[in-house]
Length: 308
Ligand code: ADP
Ligand code: MG
Image 1 (cartoon, rainbow, N blue to C red):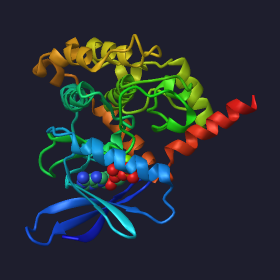
Image 2 (image 1 turned 135 degrees about the vertical axis):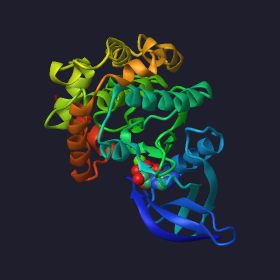
Image 3 (image 1 turned 90 degrees about the vertical axis):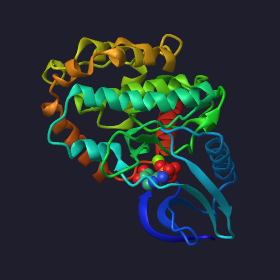
Image 4 (image 1 turned 180 degrees about the vertical axis):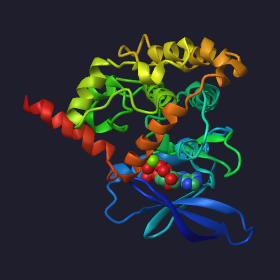
């Protein structure tokens, strides 16, 4: 391989991502390494699908695909190196935080998402750890990463195709209904809630209870955290965390929502330092929790359902 593999950058459920250098050009890249040994056919197929989808995407807010190699023991997906790390790690390092910064992050996510949705591609695993930054200095370049669950078109909701991550997954996915790219809009609603409030809209001490809450779609803007936040931001979230996917805002509507148009200076006056402390806690907990495998969690809930 033309790339020399180096330090581990991160680990996903199915892969190890390593920093690598192009031996000829010196270009730094990220290489997603997938062990072929024992890899089920369906996972190999979904990897090939991920690569095909990534190849078709070119946008400033989406991680760039560079190459794909098949070797005897490993598959390698070569990607643009995003050296800024996770968006949330950057946010929690801030000393001051306000609603304008939160809004700008959501806007960039919507830009990348709209590009995918216009092409008929749903990401299906939108969550903070799949939002990465290009550079260490500048936080404006957020990129959507990890298209491991992405699909083209509408998916019939059978349990083999369930995916996503507890806490971010849309109710229709949990209910085995057919679903489409509107699942991403639900997840963006959850992400926006966390970016502003510092904690998730749906929480429970086990996945089963969590999924019940998501299916009901009931959440609250607790006054302690939300009194500083604009009415437009709350309205934006309320139009995304809608259980009926047909009534949920689509990406175009989200883009045109008044919160996205609001004056930057005014929003900068909404101090979120109190919520930043909550976000620090959230991010720490998440980091320390054992790597939760999304699919296992969803399957576990189905087994409970079957038993009823
Ligand atoms: P998986 O599909 O196995 O979840 P991901 O694509 O999410 O794998 O990658 C796992 C982790 O590796 C990410 O959460 C991130 O920390 C790191 N990572 C992935 N892609 C890049 C990249 N292009 N540049 C830098 N780090 C990356
Ligand atoms: Mg991932």
